[in-house]
Image (cartoon, rainbow, N blue to C red; front, top):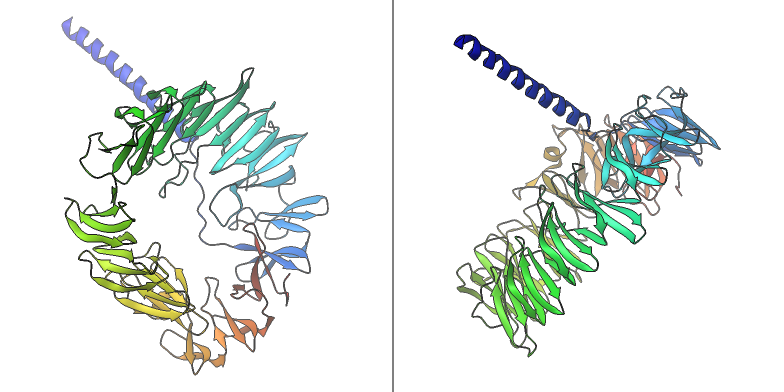
Amino acid sequence: MKKKYVLAIIIFVLVIVTIIISFGIYKKVMEQGKDYEIEEIKEYQYFILKQEDLYGVIDRQGNIVVNPQYNEIKIPNPKKAVFICYEGENTSILNEKEEKIMTEYQKIEPIRLKNISSDLMYEKSVLKYEKEGKSGLINLEGKEITKPIYDEIDSLPYKEGELLVKQNEKYGVINMKGNKILEIEYDEIKVDEYYTDENHYQYAGYIVLVKTEEGYRYGYINNKGKEILNTEYNEIARVTEIPNNENVYIICAKNGQYGVTKNEETIIGNEYQSIHYDTTNQLFVVEKSKKYGVINLQGKTIVPIQYQEIDITGIYIYAQNEKGDKTVYNTNGTQENIDASIAILKTSNEAYKIKINNEKETKYGVVNKEGKQLIEEKYNYIEYLNDNYFIASSGNGKLGVINDKGETIVETNHDSLQKIQNTPFIQATMAEEKITKIYSKEMEKICEMQDAIIEVKDYYIKVYNETQTKYFNQEGKEVKNTEVYTNNKLFVTQKDNQYGFIDKSGNIVVDYQYDKAYEFNSYGFATVEKDGKIGVINEQGQEIVPPTYEINEQKEFSFIGKYYQVTYGFGEYYYTNANKHK
């Protein structure tokens, strides 16, 4: 009996575990059903062609796919042969054979993106259509995603792949698979604009609004669709400067009183006339009855709310009373015995801090992390650069570089001096002479050029002007164009102010006959210039078009076959072979 009893318990436990596991799997599948993936497009296959004010389509070899006979053409996804062609009041969806597709749907339109940093203008995977005055979604294969049940469908700013839908004067959000993210019950929906370099707006949530008899009321829903704050607030703003994907800090107002929440938890009650966030030290400056104090992210008051004014500069808090006397606190709320005219700024290197002395006139110096003086306060400006180097400015307003011993490394005679973004290099310019200098991380000058233009690529930088072009790898070593454009067959070469092309072995394929030549683009075409006109050659060195195109306001050209690219605003461009584009 005892064995049977034990066996029954074991069977019961196994059944329960199986149910739990099955529910977990089901739940996971359901959650996956709401997932969506934004297509990444690295290579374009199709492009808009314009000839004599009519539009068509070409492919990446320059072949005409759709003849230019339409008033307008839109290509939602340049990898796929789905072309929305407008001719008068008629709209046709064509494929690469110029066949009409998706004819079972009416009024198909691409969905234009808003506030998205991309050279593509539309949702890449879905289109909207209409039936009897209602809108629905289809994918680019023509498969129906949603029935035509919405009064409106539009893109949601900042959130590619998410769509704002309207029914009965109320708004909600669905994703590009048609799955509901926010219920259709709000009068307005906005994205909170939280952004990170790695995930962009993926972790941004939603500020929602409803109209009540008392007026507008706001609430907040996180990026997972969970309601964090219900719609009872007069004002809501996420503190987007706090880099935390999981925890949402919100300054919210109720009945004219401000407070702060962390997700669903109130960390500062709604009892203040104003709240401002200090990004550098992650602190809130609060006002109550015209008195100011400071509260940290945990909701602890670290500076009492009793001062006439609060100023946070660098690592110190300067609190001024009614008499004008200042008390200095550190960011933990402990009083510091330092002169109120001194400010200490953090740098990206914990070994150094910038010291500012405002006693008589503002002067900058440098101290180490223990507070020991390294550079005395004698400069008009100092900014940490890298390693043990600092940008410094003396009385003449010019900029140079000094090290942590105060020694001059780069003369203080430059009008601007800054890091080149996404590289280890430093750019210094002299405006009057129109000279640009580039220094390595070790502060060795690797390039000096007049009228220079700098382009930053993935693993090198390009520095060029009208007469010369130089390339440098991430180590600061100058490299040849054959080392940079590894996929190209031909490369620009120069001799006696004339340009031609060589192959990888250095053999001349196109003789020195052009006044200017540009490297081949990713489609296998290169621009050449002669006698003030431009043409194009292919990878075999053959002239597709001799230099006959007139150069007007456009300096650099990108060709596909005989057609060159023209940008006409709002991120849109087309290709044409018109001798003068409008």
